[in-house]
Image 1: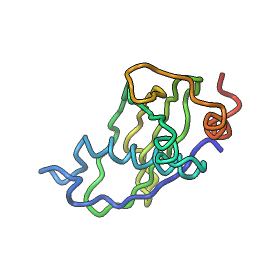
Image 2: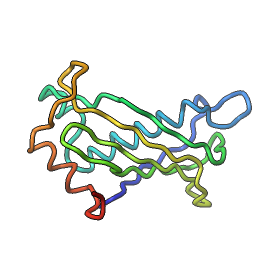
Image 3: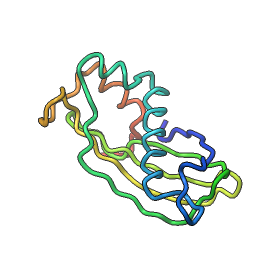
Length: 139
């Protein structure tokens, strides 16, 4: 599995005065996609956190390609771009469901941590969940 899809309908609260998705809403949609992706893998965030591990954001990228409006049905594709013992980088695509138009692409890099600023190795039993979703063609 390389991608997982989550659906969302653009809420009025997610739009700006021009009637399109506010730029910050894209990041919230990516977060929703990432949380759903982890749950789909069988490793919900709360399980990691209860074990004392967190995914600390260290970098975000995003490219806005086309607007979406209130009420539109979208889907968020989430996958893993980079996987290393101390970090994971997720990749995202947000598309319009009806036309399959690409609206946004982005990435988020996360360091595995135990509540401090230092990155730590994720234990093998948790790392294995991410490995099964990491495409074999990636280095």
